[in-house]
Amino acid sequence: MSQALDIREFRQTLGAFLTGVTVVTTINEQGEPIGFTANSFTSVSLDPPLVLVCLAKTSGNCASFANSKSYAINILAENQQHVSGTFASPIADRFATVGWCKQHTGSPIIDDVAAWLDCSMHEVVDAGDHLIFIGQVMAFGNTTQAPLGYLRGNYVRFALEQEAAVAMENPDQETSVGAIVEQNGAVFLIEKGEKLHLPQAARLGNELDDLSLLGKLNKLGLHTDVNYLFAVYENKKSKELSIYYRGQVADSSQVKQGRFYVFEEIPFEKLPDEATQIMLKRYIDEREQDAFGIYVGDERKGAIEPLAKLGD
Ligand SMILES: Cc1cc2nc3c(=O)[nH]c(=O)nc-3n(C[C@H](O)[C@H](O)[C@H](O)COP(=O)(O)O)c2cc1C
Image (cartoon, rainbow, N blue to C red; front, side, top):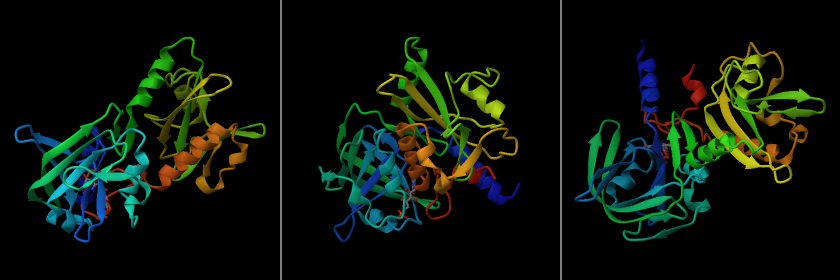
């Protein structure tokens, strides 16, 4: 086993630990707000109240955080996936698109987060290729907002999962369950007459049930795990609830019907309705932002890799 493969498997193993997503902020030497996305946040001690977060030494912000007397942990809400993307991307002013305020220490508290902790820097610990910032909590706030989850390089939205589960168990609710299946920047669509459809069925089911989504995907030759929920919405007119999962395929050589369209070449006007167009555009936006990148801490700067690459 090569060294490179070891690291990849190590990262994938760490990725099995389900976490929340935070944005860690402070004010730098120039008086500007700075921050980065982190899922390495952990509670440490109740008395005194201590928490920690780890930052890669390769981060351009590492020295500013290490020298800072305080920092804040912003625990992102389920609808703040874009904030996670912004604070993990090489964007010059990450604060341009979020509102924020100061609370106790002056470190930025981002608007509408699920919860926040404002900390004074208790200790900076050198640990391999990361620094551990142990913070003493000086002030905090909490809401009832569902937090954003992160697992195996994918965002998890718990409230959405619940909504889908309740709808699927309700016999009076008309539901359709669909899938956004991607292969290296291309989405799978099936032609029906003039229109192009995402794979869809009346229920999620299993591979042996031909009338279910998983059965249909199997029959189409798309061997994929559609484990992650992407969208749940109700059609205003028909009251039908649409539930969409997403998944990736490595190999499309077995595909029997339909084909993959690269993002730039999707004929959006041929999609069946506006809701599908909006949803697919959001998918592409998030994909391009590398929002589904996997991060578990590695040796390189900007340690985000699309999950597909990890399967190579
Ligand atoms: C969900 C997620 C969690 C992340 N967790 C961490 C982390 O705990 N520590 C870290 O150093 N980087 C983490 N990153 C990567 C950083 O956010 C990213 O590399 C950093 O913002 C790069 O910019 P910088 O060099 O300007 O700091 C994470 C990224 C994502 C998308």
